[in-house]
Image (cartoon, rainbow, N blue to C red; front, side, top):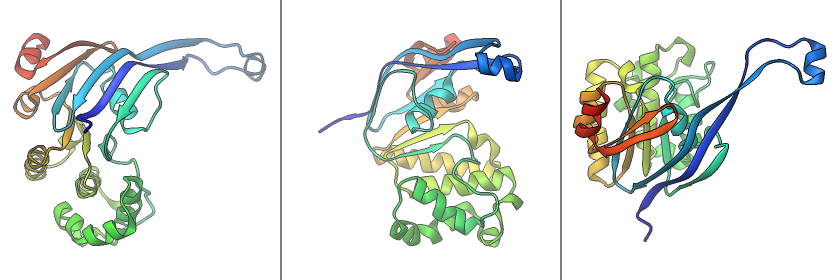
Amino acid sequence: MNKIAIKIENLSKKYLLHHEKPTLVESALRFGKKEEIWALKDINLEIKKGEKIGIIGDNGSGKTTLLKIISGITEPTEGRLETNGRIAALIDFEAGFHPELTGEENTHLNGMLLGMSKNEIRKNFDKIVKFSGLKKFIDVPLHTYSSGMKLRLGFSIAIHSSPDILLIDEILAVGDQEFQKKSYQTMQNFFKKGKTIIFISHHLPTVANFCPKTVWLEKGKIKMLAESKKVIKLYE
């Protein structure tokens, strides 16, 4: 039985930055200034099933890029990624939603994007709405929702999709205190069930309390991977 949830080998991600808008002639001749930025460089990481891993680092260190690659939102430039199990990613609460559709319609859309069948969505719909606390607003267009409301709906759909791997990028900070508490309790329950969680946050005490181990990213590279309190102490 495979005990590995995520395996990353020599993974790198490059972006090309265009510093000025080229003229028509420059575009045709491929002129203009371009800069290569390596958001990630030579990342090697193995995460076992059931582990809770924190990821910390300054803005621009590559944290979100790494989660986007793991979730399949973007592809690596180099290297190899292996994942085992259904993945639910909370990286951008706008992702997987359509502003003109209602909360109910978006629940079906987002659920299917997470790999849920129509039957699974119907079976869990009432639970999703109840957890989100959005029953009053579930039949109105998403563009009327606040950021916190979109987060609550997205998180509720994600956890009811029964993911094996849950990726969370600081997004829970948008929710109110009551919802944050409920969300963290839910993630603790996921850990007890053997689910794998990767959690990005700038709130270091939360990382220390929630994740036994933490990855410190610096300029696109892993600077340290160890017990969370040790990593955080050096990072601070």
